[in-house]
Length: 299
Image (cartoon, rainbow, N blue to C red):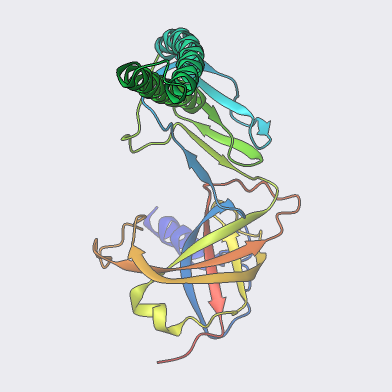
């Protein structure tokens, strides 16, 4: 039995080991000298983080994620009942003050006519100096009352304009054409101006670009205009040709960490923007992409 077991083990050890063939062939980057970075896909016009100008209660959300909107389209309506009530009172007060201005103008015309008559009578020695003086003071008083009434009307008009502006600001509109990418509020919630998350994110899904983070250690190696390629995260074969757009020369703190033990939390990165043609690939704003940039200098 021992001889048979040894024979079987010997035959098993002599069998050829199957070659490890990868399920997917690695993609050839094609750059002998390159630096790598990780980027975040965004719309070519850059995403717009929309927040309300005034805090308030959300009364209606008129769009959904994926809705295509044009410039000026209503995205969200806040509760404006208090401001509408205030506007009604201000309009009523403006109407009252406007009528007082009309009365004051009539009084000015009356006092001006009386002053004119007293001036003629004084020249003919029919009216006394005292009567002429009283007529002049009455006219000046009427003019002052008219000026005060007109100033009150201007102040009331400013209040009405301010209320209308508040009502307009409580209606959140699209600052430009695009697609609603994210909605972070619901009907009945109170939204404000100091929250970190925007009420909505608006962008374009037709033309995309990738914002690549290059660690500050490699920032000096990046040459503006260098060609680059990228692979969306989750795809091993979809190699995209990237077109240089611009380089933002101000280094910013790194926000996305890869988890490597050698990576410092205080790392700053140089952001390089590349555009690409999505074609039929399913790539979305917010998706990560591994990017390789060529023509970097060797130090």
